Length: 160
Image (tube, rainbow, N blue to C red):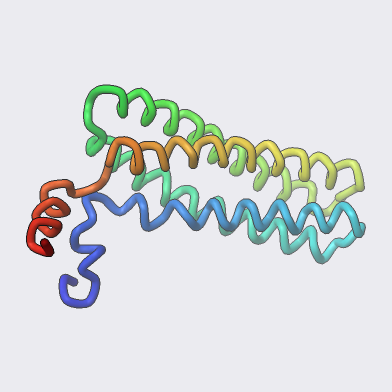
């Protein structure tokens, strides 16, 4: 793996590989559902639901890798940020699962009101997702969580 994927080999955990998929897919599902509501489009709604399903599947993998990555967060202030990130993202994932179940069972009798309810759920999901992703970014950029500091410092010394 080293010569072909040195970044992957250097990774302390695999959580960062997965985090971008649910973010992109859930926000794209919101966009398509917004189009579905504005245009009364069944096709846009079906697209939104399939993208939501894919995002939730990716979210499941992200949750699993995140739970494994939890041990790499150092004690101290970063721990409190990680606990906030974890709580919000588990809530986001639970909401996404709930929206998937709602979409599956409402697919035959989808009224304009149910479509608006789906849109509201996706807006709330996007808000939670944004807040939780910010806390994840704070872990990396403020506290250096999941960064291999000894290797990075050694590499920096080598390049001077």
